[in-house]
Length: 533
Image 1 (tube, rainbow, N blue to C red):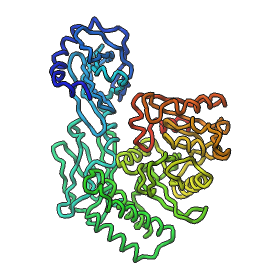
Image 2: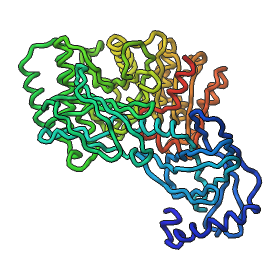
Image 3: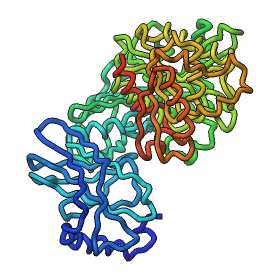
Image 4: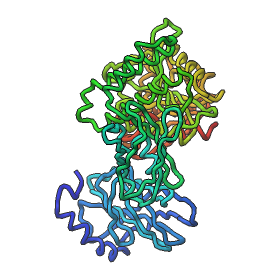
């Protein structure tokens, strides 16, 4: 519970204290951190080091921290925080107003020329919390907002009675800026072009066809983002594709793809979250789009390929149906590196197309955005994996089968295949890499389990052999405060790689575990893969 929620007195106390803090500035510790901000180009500065201040007017229940920002010119900027912990911020004596945009917290700020004093007031009970902020200009702020809107710019189920597109763009209240939107059908024909203004969130789209899927492109400033949507009742659309599937003759591979897409479509229609999960509508639209795209492709028509693809194939091991999810950039006219995401343990057994990693649609959207941002293809294979445990030989063979399947169907760049995993998925990725070191060109792990694999009870064939990884670039990211998979879990991995002469690239960031434990891929790992290309 934060200080201003525990005691209403503090709400008024903080406001009144602003001037007292400024007056007692000479009592602050002089061990400060400078952030240099210069020029007119797009700029972002990370503020993650603070000096603890001393003040006679500060009660024991609160702590005060200071950072100095050095600006060569006056400029309007935005202070971003990925987490809201009840902190209050004061810049040059003025209390900053917290605003919300998606999963981010931001504060509009105005920097004066010269030294600017930023004060953070925190609850003493949260003394272990690390303050990390990002200071951005409007160019970077718009880019961050556009990235966060990928796949969810507006409500994706269009009522055919009104043909109205209803925007959900909170950005209009953040940075008033005109933007545009283009609407395309599945085969790439432009249906509509809209000029979006901050005083209108409803737009009529009379050219839409009932039962059809569409792709939209939203452009704001220099940034663009995409979203699929459906015009019509999803139950009727499902029945339309079900009947179409039953009435046409198609190849075995196409039949398998359609059958599995219809399975996820029906799973979502019957899922209880349909009644109360706001994100449910954003899960239905991509499936409907992929179904229409698949049928159009079978008929020989090209178009705008989906960036979220639910894929199925017959295993080379025994012919059984296996699945994977593939995320791609929008531009598929060139080849890209492939990132193979190995799933962690699950508490309960799920069908792959209903696994927990796909339950958070915002995380699914985030992967699509990152693929577009960094120019990567990301795949998540089913791999015959059980809920718990290490990989066995069949798991490893199936993962390699899935990789071969994706390489044949998608434009994967030769010699650039990377492994990525977090938590217990990390130990599985380490197994796979140490048994097939010639198949992978690098590895990015988030808080990987490792120490428990030292137990000699495990057969040699499933042991992780670090000596086999001495030529592989390895990135390890963690959170010093992560209670689920703390650094001690992978300390032996880092030390072991040092001993074999291949030190890991280690990155630590406070509170990052709150994000990497619920997302599918981590941006830091993707940045690392681009660096070692």
